Length: 142
Image (cartoon, rainbow, N blue to C red; front, side, top):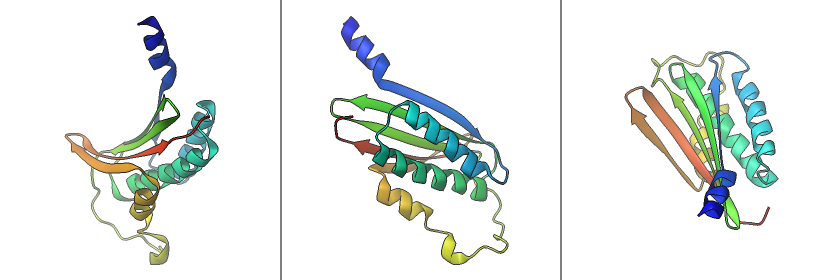
């Protein structure tokens, strides 16, 4: 029993990071996530995909939702692999405002990118707002 508990404690990690509604927040949050994933020794290929998903979910929250927003990373290592869960919770949809000077070719692909990289993904609504989440699995030896 003690060995199982020790394995569970060593195998699960979690990090929470507020997302400020300011210019430069996406790159700052992404850099922070990169440090966290490196500290957890997440394999580089999974970390690269995860950072792209972090960027897309955080960008969505900043552009389309009301603050506050929070990024939550959870990493569970298992036998021969692991699952990284990325969640961004926000206060719900903001009133639609046009993206001034935005190039339409550079917007609107975030959801497609998340779908392509994630093993599982979804949206959960709750009293405080909306949480968009994605899980990325890796099945290999670290």
